[in-house]
Structures are given as C-alpha cells and as structure tokens.
Image (tube, rainbow, N blue to C red):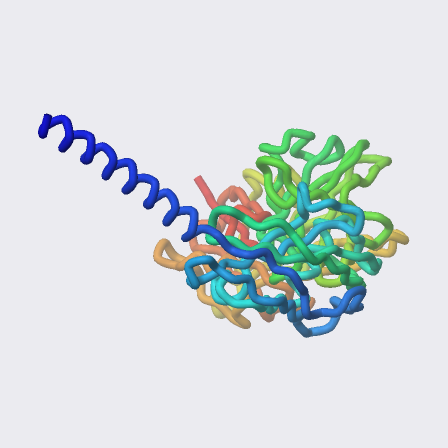
Length: 375
C-alpha cells in the first residue's frame, strides 16, 4: 500500500512539474503587440536621392516575464496585406531597440522590390511585429510612407549578359560575366547579332533583370537588336540608370619604329581579338633594333562617327620583357596617340619570328591585357 501511495505521489509530482514547466515556457514567450507607431508620420514623403536616413520608431511591447522583446520592421506594397511582405528586417541593436535607422540607399532597394520604378514615386506600407523569437504578435498599427526614387538602381555585386542576340545564348548558366569597372558600373566587349538581350544580377536562381531602353537602364524586360553581327562595348551605370553602346569596328597593332599599323586583329569571341603566325621584324637603327608597339581601337558612336581609342602601357617607357616580367607589364590602359610614349617592347625572341598576339578585354582577367607568344 505504501509503495502504491509513493508511486501515486511521484506521478502527481511529475505531472505538476510538467504543467509548471509548460506554464513557464508559455510565460517566457508571451509579449504584447506593438500598438502604436510613432514616426515617421503617416504618408510622410522621402526623396531617396538625398544622402540621408529614415528613422522608424514605435511604442514598446511588454514581455510577460519582464524580459527583452524582439522587434522586426516589415514593409509591403501599398495594396499588400503583409501575407507576403516585400521585406522584413530587425530593428537597431539586432532587434532589441524600438527604433530602426534605415539609410535611403537601403530604402531605395526596398522600393525597387515593391515595383516602384527609378525616377518614379510610390507608397510603401510599414509596421512592426514583436516576439520572443517565437509567438510573433499580429500587426496592430500600419502606416504609409511615400518615396521618390532617384534615377538608377542599387548596383548588384555582379552583372551578366545573355539572350538570343548574345554570344552566350539564352541559357542563364552560360551568361557572360561583365567586368565591374567601379562600385556602380559594368562593361562588356562582345558581339551582338539578330535577336534580343538583357542583363541579370546573377547566373543562377531568379536574378533581377535589366534592359536598355534608348540610353536608359530599365527593369524587367529585354532589348531587341537587329542588323548585322557587330562587336560592341556595352556600358551600364547603375548610379544614374544610364547605358552606352559603342561599336568597336577595328583593333590594330601599331608599330612605332615604322610609324605604321602592321595588322588588324580579327575579333574571336568573349572580348578577345587575335592574330596568329604573324611575322614581326624589328627596325634596325644606328643604336640597335627598335621593337616598340601599342594598339588602336576604332569605335563608332550611334550616328556612325568614327573615333580613335589608343591602348598602351602604364609606363611611359619600357625594357624588353623576359620570362621573369610580371603580368602587369602587358596590362592595357587608355593612352594618347603619341608615337613613342606608353609603348610596349616585344621580347627579344619575337624578332624575325611568327607571333601569336591576343588582346583580351573580358572579366576573366583582372585587368585588360594582351599576350604575345612565339613557337
């Protein structure tokens, strides 16, 4: 009988303990909702082109255990019901503070996600939800902000080119990586043929899509290309939403000693021009043999006007390269049309030999460069 009583009391103690723990767990996750938003006031207007930040503040929620409360600020479109919000992020202090400081550059990204176009205006809903990490409370107060977006888009980390008009075709995984030339700008030297093309922010998943409309960068579309296959330099500037397309009609090897262009370098693909087995002979001077060279690109603007762009060495003068010469020697940078300055020098073994010469302007090299080799 005693054993039965002890067992009964033991079971009862366990049940009481479990019930108490359950009550404690529920108590530790209970918080009140955020009942009032303080700022910005409803329908506040923000010009996101300014160098500033938006400050969001709200009434404190209370935890049943008098502990900390976590806050998330949630954004949706003007017509949204927050069932599939545009964006959610924790408040300042990793979610612990009753305040969110949001740079206009970040708010601009949220506006883009909500479908508000560059140089356009629109409204966003915002609210705050409280929780202990679980047991998220419903939204009690919702406000609107009106935002005016600047020209341009937040720049992606990478930009790719693809489409039926491109060398890559329409496969996302084969898209051409464009060279990032600054925080907000990209460019590619590539050929286009009959078809359509566009840009994507990555070559996997569901990337953001951009396209050229006149000289403007737009979202969610593609650009039609008609006419003969030609080589172009395509530039994209996300900071102001502008683009520039320039035809590259010719790339030539300039030989300074004879004051002549020795040969064209035909375009191959992937921003590369090459000539193979081309005979090179240095010029005999009283002081020795001269071997200086650089390159000229002939480009055309949209009206067909031709322009010259010279590319040469970062150094005003050079020594002949050897096997120990670093890769920076062959880097190509814009230079003047001066006959001698910023010229390269062929290696000694190139004299009276057939050389393979390639000019490489793509994102696979750290800097635009060229290669000279002989068998």
